[in-house]
View 1 (cartoon, rainbow, N blue to C red):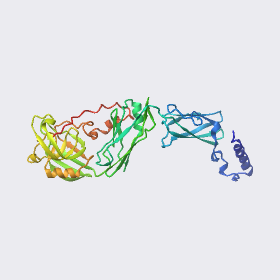
View 2 (view 1 turned 90 degrees about the horizontal axis):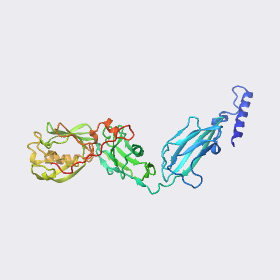
View 3 (view 1 turned 90 degrees about the vertical axis):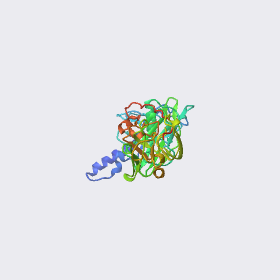
View 4 (view 1 turned 180 degrees about the horizontal axis):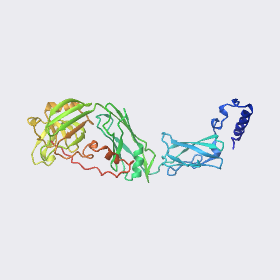
Length: 413
């Protein structure tokens, strides 16, 4: 091997130190094999990657093998041009390293191989290669939601896939590639598969107030399943404002509003009457409309009504709102008379409309109504306890969650 002269120099230095006696360091620390400049380990290893201008098949694993009996591999690091690491395993005897994760298609890789010979002298070799394109397979693309902007602390991050992913191993590949970051940091966080084409991400508790949250995909070029490769996806950035939570007590007929944990308003309200009880649970503001026409026909009610409603803040897709209800002011604070919505005076509804935004939280307690659906009728994500939420991740040993429930798409007044 071409590094043998270095070994002779080290041995000669050792003899000289012995001859000069203890405490004399004629060569210093630079004479130790581990401090020597690494030699070129090209002749000490074989590599399964392509030679010359050829491109590697991304379906095939990488392999680095030690040659002969004079040395071993100590470390292998493989990354692509995007900085993504390739997971791999090194045999205990240092004779072989192989990748354990798929390569990306149409990517450029750099592989750093470290070795040592029988005397402990370090060797290095840097290898580069490109992978071929994915071919005619259609790309799996991710669309993050909501749109960029400012939201309340209850807004989940969504990831919509353009193709279904049902296999758990494939789901795990997708989930590992979807990255969410919060500054300041949130308390934990996990993806939850709503169905085969939709994931939601939320922390254990709500997002921090005044946070910047980013979501991105590292799926590009990664093989997800047979004939399915990750495509390019647009990243997302949103911010949060103050923590705003409105707690509606259907039993006492009052709403209490908190900003960052401190009460800022208390409002008399009316909620759903018997047969039309308002849903219990935490709901996320979906949007706001200055005026909405609500009719009995839209929900199949036998009680006729046809009203133009103002200052309407939507909390379910099926039509539950917080809105102005001047016709029921005599009942607000005393009785529940609505068809499912939370009604209040026009001035209070205008204040609520101006104070709340998408992503803020409305919680209903002490209603005789059903619980808010976790998915399909807005964002009921926060009604799922943390343990159950984590079980909806493909990175746990859990069952696949039920498909999203279908919701009625009609207003309730």
